[in-house]
Length: 308
Image 1 (spheres, rainbow, N blue to C red):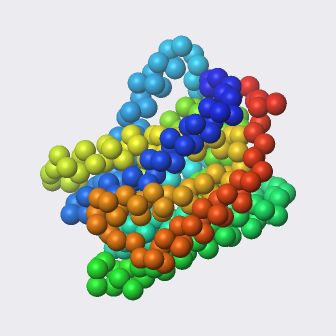
Image 2 (spheres, rainbow, N blue to C red):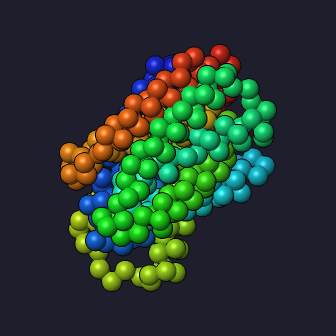
């Protein structure tokens, strides 16, 4: 079981995790000569296998919550499939459009989540949260618009943007399921089976669409493993930990900083020069995130659930 952590540790995990998200699009750009489906399969299987030693240790020490209650198994399977589809669509989108556009459109989920949490869970958000979410997303959209005229640079921006948008919708579903399941399960008790289902989903898609790979280049292998350890285990792992204590809407708004990191890294590493409009969009996004988190979210440390 997870040990109760302080707010400082939760926020520290989020800072580390969110930083790794900005690296993901750049890593994928280095692998665009290889199959996107192969890359995402290596990523998800790699992340799952990295958790196996931790699972074995926890199982031997009887710290791992093995038994699922009620419909938890079905929900975790749904979450894993959703995560696998999200990774597949998002990674594939980077093969057709820019880092900025893909990163922006895949982070539309705060709008979906704040509406879903209000309707499904009757959650009340302060006016500044609503304003912040829409301002931050508006900045993200502006950042994406800044490279919509890059048809000659990127092979199929329309297709890539559609994939990124679909990936965002699926991610919202995945996050809402995680919010529910994580209330009663430990971090490992949730991510281990979910990452397993995600890996299986990506593997099935790869085999159905492309068949069994005939060769495995070292470059795509290392990039896939880097994506597994950084953006998935550290990035998504930090979100899966924090979602027990913080609203998915607030967490997803933080993810809107990903395009900022990604765009900056793309400038220095890939020489994708951001336009003046992109700089303005980055500032607007940061203002929105600041408004959303102006009042620090109340974490649930006052009444911690037994299996954290």
